[in-house]
Every structure is written in structure tokens, then in C-alpha cells.
Amino acid sequence: MIRIGIAEDVESNRVDLLHHLARYSEEHGTEFATTEYSDGADLVAGYRPRFDILFLDVEMARMDGLEAAHRIREVDPEVIIIFVTNMAQYAIKGYQVDALSYLVKPVPYFAFAQELTRSLTRLNKSDDDAVMLSVGGRVARITTPDIVYVESVKHRITVHTLDSEYVFSGTLKAVEEELEGKGFYRSNNCYLVNLRHVTSVEPTSCVMTGGEELAVSRPRRKGFLDALTDHVDSRTRR
Image: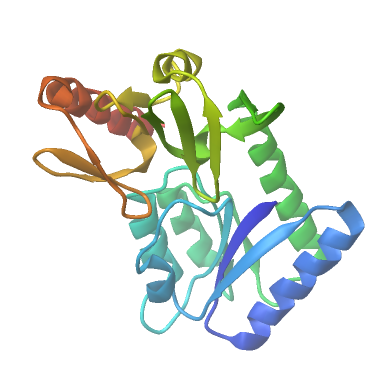
């Protein structure tokens, strides 16, 4: 399931993009979960990294697509951004926010399909970053960027992802070894957090995507902050 956000203040233009997505889905067998926004401000409010692709109108009343993209990039360096605009000269500014491309209105289906295919190709390349876990007698393939944190309670492991939870018996140490080098840090004896989903740090805790507040033990705090700083720096340099 590919998660798509559309921020466009003209309803007819949103409908056109939805029709293109439906046609592409029928022709290619790809499933999309789509969320619509009538302004960039609505998209940015409470934004969390849950989309795979964003289609952003450049010109909107309260917050234009360029400003929205700048805000989004502060918390989500991975989402693919495609601008939709009446004027192609604005598109060059998209490079400032690592936009993949732009589409000029009215958006023809052929151009839309080409850019969507290119986006899905990029997603498939990053989709190799996944972990295989034995859950309830079956093997589940979980994309690591979707994991928010892993919780351990008496050898009961719960993997909290953006969309669901996976529960199985095991040790946090084993999961930590499986996710080594993938941007995770053990904040205390109970939690292994995905650094890309840390939205803020409090004196004794960290706040994750979705608002969950997890304890950071005193002995691990310095290492946690160092790891978080390194993680943010590496994302910025990309």
C-alpha cells in the first residue's frame, strides 16, 4: 500500500489527480491510500512522517507548496515530493527541498504516470531496508523506516510501526542486533527507538512520531543525544 498525500486548494484539480491515481492503480495493480488537503497549512499541521509521496500545489492561499515542503523537510527527509504548478518557472525552487519533479497543470495522465512510476522506482530501491521477524508462527517483513519504536516487557516484544503493531516472544537484545546500523538506539532497558521518528527530547524522555513519550535513562542520555545528533547530521548531508 502506497501512502499518498495531495495538497491542492482547487477541488477540480484534486479530483483530476485522484482519477489519475485510480487509473494507474487499475492499469498497474498498485494500491494507494490517499489523504487530501485543501491547503499546505492543513498538511503541515501535526505532520508526521507517514506518507510515501506528496503532491503539492505550488500556489495555495494560506501556505504555498514551497513553504509546506520546507516545513515537512524539517521532520521528514525521506518522503518523495512532486510539485504541481501552473508556472514551470517555480519548479526550479523545488530543488531547495529535494523535490523529485514537477507537473504542469492541467496534468495529463501520461506525464502523471511517468512521474509516479519514477517515484515508485525510488521507493522500491529504499524498500530493501527491511527486517524479517517471526510473528505468531509466520514471518513478517517490516520496512524499518516504518518502525517507530520497539518495546520489551518480560520477553514480550512489541514492534510499534506507523500503521500497526507486531507482537512476539523474544529479547530486545536480539532485535537490537537485527536492527544494528539502521538508525536505532536503545533509550533504556525497555525501548529501542527509531531516531528518525524522534520529534523532541525532554529531560528524561523523548517524544516520538504519534506523540508517544518514552523514557530515556540517565546512563544512556548522553549516548542517545550523540546518536540523535549524528543521525540528524547524516540526514542533512544527503
